[in-house]
Length: 268
Image 1 (cartoon, rainbow, N blue to C red):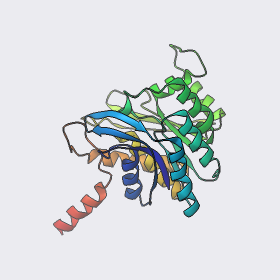
Image 2: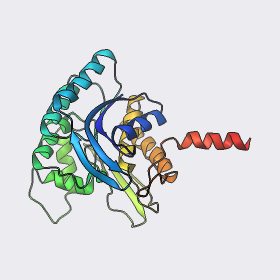
Image 3: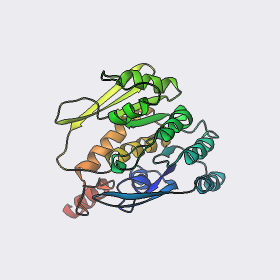
Image 4: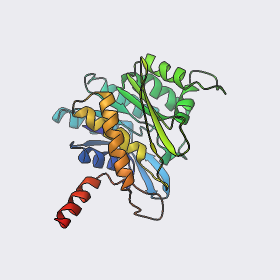
C-alpha cells in the first residue's frame, strides 16, 4: 500500500506514523513524501513542501515496479501537488483510497481556499473514504455555501458524497463531554457511530492512526464499515499504551501488541 504525506521527525503523524500503523496491522507500506516538517512532541514549527514533479516521480517509479492494494493521502501541500496526486490515483480506480488531508498537529499551517477547492474537485470525488473533523468539514463547506449558525453537518456530508466520495467519517461529532465520538456516513446516511471514553492527557497522532488503520484494513480486503471498526479498536489500544517520549504530547504506541507479547513471555 502507498501513502502520500509529510515527514515527521517525531513519528507521531505523517509518513512515519503511517508506515508504523501499516506494519502494526500486517501491511508493507510504500511512501511518497509531499513535504518535510520541522517538529518535536510539542508541535510543528515549519513545513517545507516538495516540488510537485518530485512527488509525481516518486509515485510513478514505484507504481511501475509494484502493485498496491490501497492508497492513503495525508498532507498534500499546494494545488499543483494535489493535481499531480489526483492524476496518479485516477489511473487506479479499482484501488481503495483513504483521504485524510487535515491534521490538528498542523493547526498553524494555513489551508487557503484554493487548496480546499482543489481537494474538493480533484481528490474527494475519487475517495473511497474521506476523514475530517467537525471543524474541518465546516471550513471545507464554506467553499460551496455561506457560513451558517445552524447545524449543517449531515447536509454538508451528503454534498461531499454527491461529489463522488463513497464514505465520509466525521471525527469529534457531538457527544457527552467524557466521550469521543466518530460518525460514518454513506449515501444512505449514518452507517455507524462509535464512541469511546476520552483519555486523560494531550495526544498527537490519533487521527493519523485511524486513517492509516482503515487503509491497512481495506488493503486486506474488508469492507469500509468493518475497516472503520478495526481501525477504531487499534487506535484505542495504541492510545491507551501511548508514550511520553519528549516534553510535549503523548504519542500512540502502534506496536503495543509486540510489547504485550514480550511481557507475557517474560511472565511465562
